[in-house]
Each structure stands twice: as structure tokens, then as C-alpha cells.
Amino acid sequence: MKIGIIGIGAIGGIIAKKLAATGHEVKVYSSGGQQKLEERARELGVMPSTKDQIITDVEVLIVSVPTIAVPELSDLIAKVSDKMIVIDTSNYYPFRDGEIEDLKNGKVESVWVSETMGRPVIKAFNNLLAHSLEYGGKPEGTKDRIAMAVSGDDQQAKEIVSTLINDVGFDTVDAGTLADSWRHQPGTPAYCTELTVAELMQALTGGEKQEAAHLRDYVIGKFMEFSTPPTHEEVVALNRSLFPKNPKEH
Ligand SMILES: NC(=O)c1ccc[n+]([C@@H]2O[C@H](COP(=O)([O-])OP(=O)(O)OC[C@H]3O[C@@H](n4cnc5c(N)ncnc54)[C@H](OP(=O)(O)O)[C@@H]3O)[C@@H](O)[C@H]2O)c1
Image (cartoon, rainbow, N blue to C red; front, side, top):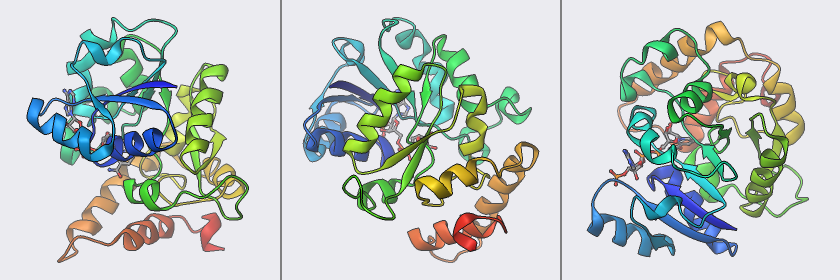
């Protein structure tokens, strides 16, 4: 497919690299200047794009920026054709994104993103760490293949997004509508816990919406206590340990 990606940091970059490696036509844009963009694109094996061109002649647009940057992109994304699938990978972290009143008051993150951009989005690629995406992919049908959650209000778009995720080595679980997507936000059992399809289906029913923000901030506080940055395994283990009924804790 023809894919545009805005934001090529930890997660957008690895999505770009993996999709290009499986034969998709990928172009990328980020705000950090032409030289940085060109170097990063070369490293990822994809084409650099201008801001205007990133939304032209693509079937899928992946927006992979910190939540705080979403409003800066709303004018651009307002110009996107209705037929284009827009994927939102974001997770809201107040320590990074600042206080966003609606999100602080419990609005579902991707619902806010969709309203801010003025168009439907599919929430995907948010509930696995970049490290999992880079190293955890397996061929379709492999036992213990990790699954990603996909939410949104357009069934056909979710199926297309699931195909892309399968291409890069992961199963998917349809997690429901965009309004349901809080079930794979930070602070839930489905968030960055590396689960199989059956386990993720169970985890998606296990979160507490009112508790999620508190747990998200608790995890960040725990990481701050580490004298050196936690390893990937430590991050996943802490996320899993928050939930006594987590499928991986049985
Ligand atoms: N890291 C993970 O493991 C992970 C996993 C799942 C989901 N997520 C979520 O995905 C989103 C991106 O995360 P990340 O870790 O990849 O962040 P990151 O490493 O900080 O990268 C952010 C990217 O967005 C670009 N950017 C920022 N503002 C922009 C703007 N106004 N216009 C265009 N590009 C802009 C940055 O460009 P420059 O560097 O060129 O300025 C950079 O390429 C976040 O919401 C995050 O919570 C992250």
C-alpha cells in the first residue's frame, strides 16, 4: 500500500522501517528539519516527504507524534481525503504532553485526537513498546505471537490496518469502537504487556477506566526511581504486575 507517516521517532520510525521492508511504499515527514529528516529516512529505507506531500497519493496516513503535537497537525489533516485511513498511535502522558483539560477529565485519548483533527481515526500501534515492535514480530501462525489492539468506528478500515500489522509480524484484536479504545490506553492490562490474541481479548475486558490515569502515572513514578533507565523486560514486567488478574500473571 502507499503509506505516509508523520513522526519518525521511536515508534513511527520502526513502523516505517518494517512496512517498507515488507514491500509497502512508505514516505515520511517530521518537523525536525530537512537534513535530519533525510538522514532518518535513509536510515529507515523510506522516502522523505514535505509536509504538504505527505498527505498526497497515500492510502493510509500514520500519525505518530506526541499528543501535544496533534493540534499543530489539524490544519494539514483537515485536507486529507475522506477515503484515506488515518491511524493514531498516540498515548497521553502529562509529564511529556502537559495538562490537556479534556484528557485530564477522562475523554478517551483517540476520541480527542479525532475531534482535534476533525476526522475519523483508527487507534493502532499504541499498545506495544517500540522495542516489542522492532524485535517481537513473528510469522503468522506462530505460537505465542504477540497481538496488537485496533479500535475505530470503520470496520473495513480496521481490517486494512490489521493486515498491515500482520505484515509487520503481529496478530490483532478488534478492540471495538474508538470510544472503547480507552481499554488499550496506558494504565490498562492491555497496555504494553505483550499478550497473545486470547490473552489480549481477556485483558481488554479487565481495565478500570477511572483507575487508568492513576496507574499510568504510578508506573512513570516507578521508572523515575530507577538509577538507570529500565530495560524493556523491566517495563513489561512492571506493566503486567499492576493487574493481579493479568493473563500473563496466572
Ligand atoms: N515509544 C514507544 O514505545 C511508543 C509505543 C506506542 C505508542 N507510542 C506513542 O506514539 C507517539 C510517538 O511516540 P514516539 O515514542 O515515537 O515519540 P518520539 O520518539 O518523541 O518521536 C516523535 C516524532 O514526532 C515528530 N514530531 C513532533 N512534533 C511534530 C509535528 N508538529 N509535526 C510533525 N512531526 C512532529 C518528531 O519529529 P522531530 O524529532 O523531527 O522533531 C519525531 O519524529 C506518542 O504519542 C507515544 O506515546 C510510543
